[in-house]
Figure (cartoon, rainbow, N blue to C red):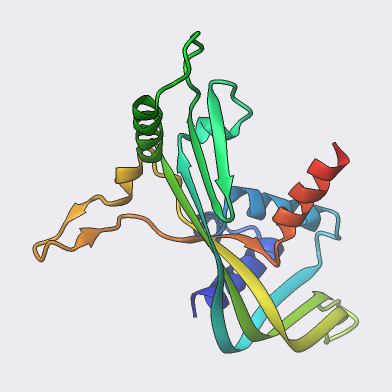
Length: 210
């Protein structure tokens, strides 16, 4: 239901300038994804209307869970940090101090433990089995009562939606507090970070080009 509503808001954002809806779109989609889609929209005729919808969802399954721990500065080619990666887990920690002696295990363990709490970010890839419908059209003209449909497609297909959390720095900011039943209070919302791995594929192609 959340994804269906998100696509409704996205269609509105890509078609009509509306300050209130724009703020909602910014809270639902990551800045990088929203900007990528809006840049693509600028290449089209301003009068064109875009409508993307999901009339029916049949199933949804979690594909991958991506976990990033450590200060976000560790992922900006910062030489003061070192990265550790295994499968879908990435950890960025302060690099060891340059000394003549090899770092002992106790210091290494403390350095990593501190790095784990410096920040946290989670991304979940969900594969949705759904009917996806999109239409690109021009509005009615004075001489024609019907919209001019330039492109239309509807079909059942897998759709991969990546949901992400904010980057919590430090990591314990993920929980704002506890309620009267001692349940954690999560004062944040998931947002859509990618659709069909669009940004992920472009980032991979850019790394290959380098």
